Length: 149
Image (cartoon, rainbow, N blue to C red; front, side, top):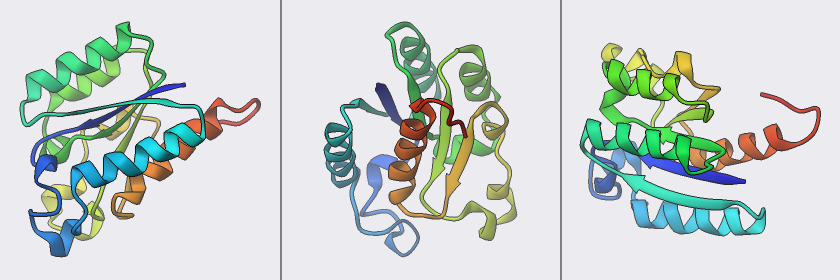
């Protein structure tokens, strides 16, 4: 299985940006943890982060062409208004799971709407960076015979 972990704007600031909301773990820390889990399950994992909408779209399109089996995507603030990212996810046959570190549903009202979620398999929100681990497990379970999410 080949998974892409895709992170949007400001995720490069994990560990520094609002640690009371997002924790002290850095993006590198999270990638190390996910790489270890991936290797335990024979999953090939790649990571990509950008603060630029178009670059994220390009990477989604590349995933559709490079044999990626699933995308674990934290679109950051783009979650709430990027129809272009929604269309990119919707236009490829690669399934995606949306991830948010904080529980967006108990924060400001503008954070409670995702334009991305309707084109995803599901959404993990509020579990910290463990949401990425849960999303990876969801893909692993989905890959098992007679199991779907």
